[in-house]
Image (cartoon, rainbow, N blue to C red; front, side, top):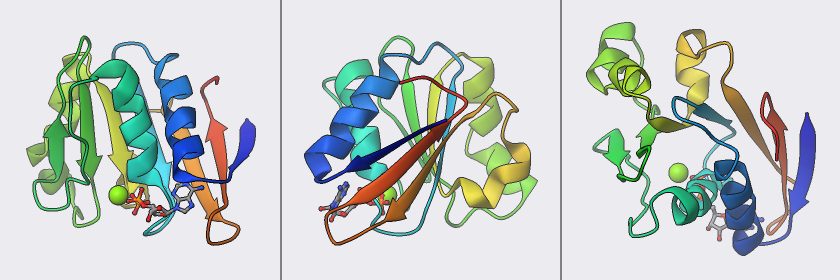
Length: 140
Ligand SMILES: Nc1ncnc2c1ncn2[C@@H]1O[C@H](COP(=O)(O)OP(=O)(O)O)[C@@H](O)[C@H]1O
Ligand SMILES: [Mg+2]
């Protein structure tokens, strides 16, 4: 387990890039922590490594954004996902089978469906500009 405090959006993005460099095909990166914590910023950093031409935005309405890349980076927002059928509809299982790298916001809502080897990234707000970010199950 690694716990790192970031002091800006840029530092959180950089941490995302660092983690992305360690992610192989089929990795599920599961984010925990509420609104405005920096989850999307972290995914933006992941995309800088895995899908550099992609425009990252929280897939709040689409539920899923496929950014491409090899393997592709796929970004989920599970805020409104409540049941297994909903989850299946997002492509959560199909993308894993296809060897994509999954970045999953609001993993609290689908915790029972996470693979046991998921990388868990938990955000805590320390101040307006500081976030404590804990990474479990992966290396940085
Ligand atoms: N250390 C930090 N890391 C990430 N975001 C930060 C940090 N400090 C302040 N922020 C702000 O917090 C917000 C994070 O937004 P976002 O990444 O969309 O969060 P989430 O996806 O968790 O809702 C942005 O407004 C950003 O400017
Ligand atoms: Mg977000």
